[in-house]
Image 1: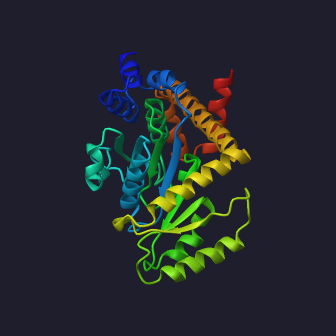
Image 2: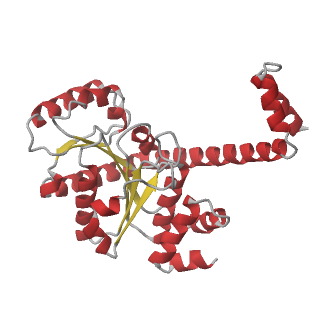
Image 3: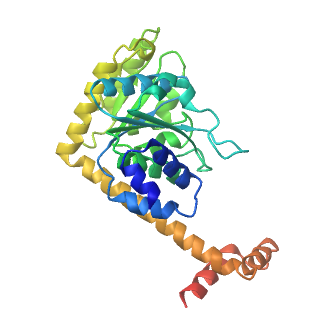
Length: 312
């Protein structure tokens, strides 16, 4: 397949086309992913999440530059709300990371949530694999900053960084939302603002209360991303985390669970598609919907019958 061959030879055009192919579910999308799969599994995937206004894009930009200084190649997937008109990303972080786009060692892609109820769509996972197969050493996924994506990120990332900022008044809200449970590393960004010490103390107290699951206590680092302060220290902490999960077996456990989830999702999608194709073929499904709508049958009975007929 030409697009795969060109991508594996280092063509950025082929890389962009491959992501567009899976994002728009073109006919050849599955074949592209099949052929690339053997080349995946080498990149360090880092999730960047946190509330809106925390400076996630600026932090991602500075982290990417630090990794570039270390000689690493970087991929960035910036998740944005989906446009109801085009289906694409509304914002476009390439604008916010303008100078990075000039670096041949960095590839940035904005992606919409694609109707995944605020979370990360399967297309995000596939884009990560494509960047991985292309040979990127480090891949960042930066979330929208609201909704289920904050939690979903932990299913895709090897290291999840939760970015907090003093003075937004949402620190306690975030704690209630359970966001503390997903952080491998916490970054208090804009740490030159008033309230950084208080936020640090609150985070430390909450982490003291949380149960140790893996033996890794999430460190809290302070950054002022706009001034590039604390970036090198944060990268060092990220390196410590990936070394820990590697040695402890936690990374293998996470990746096994990730593979399991992906296979289950693909299976559910395939089964649903088969069922809908068969029941939609002669308008049967619409007729069944009407019987349920008119209370002639209940949806549970109808679904059981559909499954029984398929199993014959």
